[in-house]
Image (cartoon, rainbow, N blue to C red):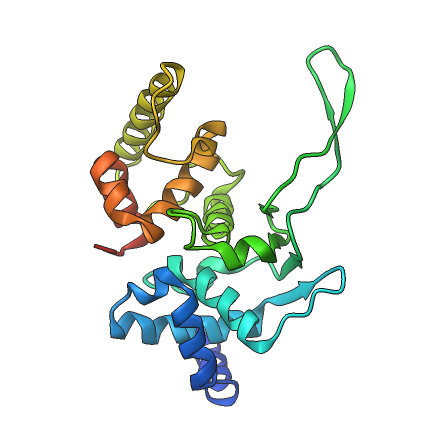
Amino acid sequence: MLDKIRNWRARRTIARRPIAEPLWRNALQRCTAARRLGASDQATLRVLATLFLEAKSLEPTRDLQLEDADRVLIAAHACVPIVKLGIDWYDGWHSIIVYPDAFIPRRLQTDAAGVVHQTSSMMAGEAWGRGPVILSWADVLNSGKRPGHNVVIHEMAHKLDMLNGDANGFPPLHRRMDRRVWSRVFSSAWDRLKEEQRLGAELPIDPYALESPAEFFAVASEQFFETPANLREHLPDVYRQLEQFYRQHPL
């Protein structure tokens, strides 16, 4: 019964609040990952973006003004990873807070000696468990301009990762996927890249991926959708695991 209600509500949303054709064409022009999709998947993406805009509150801050075209662009980026998964994969959270530029969240952390420090690092995006996603609008606009970078996809990957607990680089896998293979592939790639980094080699992926397993999954997801050929060439096993998880073949 719940699925029927959801489907009815979805159909009503799509019928009553469709994304206007000029806004959608604009989003496709500005979203590299969306342009790579075939016509059928682009049509699915448009439906998902419509439902996303209905379900999520986009909240600009500090006098930032988001036009309708900007909101559709964010939704298009956000829904690329779930084209084959469905909008339900983004259940459980409501808000996207958008800063004009990189932001500095201030937090207190306690080190091993018990000393409390205040952290103040510049960030382009952040995802909170069942809380909001936070984005830098400047970095959203740069998505696709720096090869392999897409802050919206990065944060959405964190949201998918958190569906089964804390972000740890191990999202809920599909029934036919092997958890042992996933763990082996990502651990092996991590160890190899760590060694290459230690030796001073140029990495085929943003070094930020090596901050933690969660960041590795999110950065690899960015590359999977933005520069899939590079990911498949340098980390083919990781690429194949992401193909299975996202159920997409960007090449």
